[in-house]
Image 1 (tube, rainbow, N blue to C red):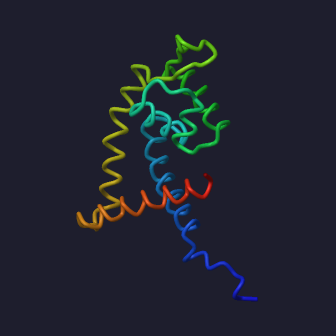
Image 2: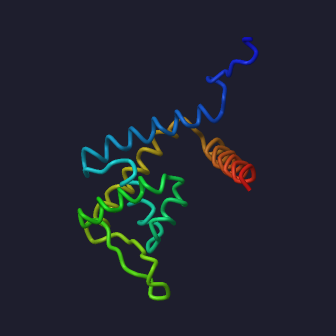
Length: 149
């Protein structure tokens, strides 16, 4: 029977999930203290800072987050006037989101903090290891897509 047990400590999806959750929680704690942002909210600000004028569905797709969680976070960010919503000129059923002036101010502070966290995570990696890590993550992402495609 023991051969059927899943060795979680060496099961890649589990390890990636735990690592991702740990890093996200660390970032969320920092952003909650400084900016009163939850995980989903800071991810939305980050994605719209990089890719403005996305719909809520496009944000959910790019971040692989639950659409309901994104919708709630968008509503909260709109209420806090950290986001703006406008309707697409070509399709009035589609609204697009962008950062407001307050959202841009937060993004300008969040982005350097995110880079600092990344640098702290990679402090013991040399340049070759950083390149290899990115290559391996790209390969994993491509493999994941082909499993569902």
